[in-house]
Picture 1 (cartoon, rainbow, N blue to C red):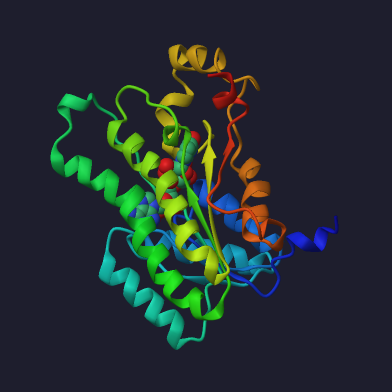
Picture 2: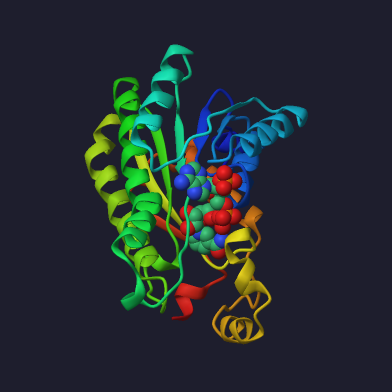
Length: 255
Ligand code: NDP
């Protein structure tokens, strides 16, 4: 197999939540594979800084700071891409949040915020992207799921509901849009070293529990998602559709 199958030159990738964390690692990997990156996050200064760093490294990058729960802002961003003749070939729906507390203590507003940030955003952004990909007969959508797409753990009920939804939203996108040359797949990261897990990384009891369950016996590094992301964004995966690839050190397999 030629490595050119994984070449993303000439492609533009919108990666939500790419100002830091897993989205940043995925965006950097795609940039190294040749893609132009549209960097997104809520904080415009962090987005601006990330764009400057991508450009300083010799990559093509643009910033699009918007909140993925703000539908008018998403529609405006896509209209702006149209005006600038930026065709988004690859979308990575990565932006997400966690909120931990017992299920009986969650307010409905807290529930909605987690669902809207982790799940509804992927629907709205996927829809806006697909409207433009369908006439071009090409597109790659990658939704970021989680172990929570498959498993439940106490205190993260809305997150688990959202990530389970990501798995089936991905399948719905795949079955509706495959006829238009679009693939929609998901990546399910295991426990990765990012800000999201700051509180867990130094918790000894949690680490003891976790290391008993991950066959690889370690946390994942953000860069370890890059291979799956490039595969799903590239011509190497033209007949892979509606799948979720777990990048989890073997954790799901051990359950
Ligand atoms: P981080 O908290 O480290 O980074 C989150 C990123 O998302 C930041 O760029 C942040 O932007 C952005 N973001 C958050 N909320 C919004 C929003 N409403 N609109 C736009 N951007 C937003 O998270 P991770 O990198 O750890 O997680 C990324 C994804 O991976 C999430 O979907 C998460 O659920 C998933 N995941 C993570 C795992 C892990 O172990 N870390 C495991 C499984 C899944 P800003 O800088 O402006 O705040």
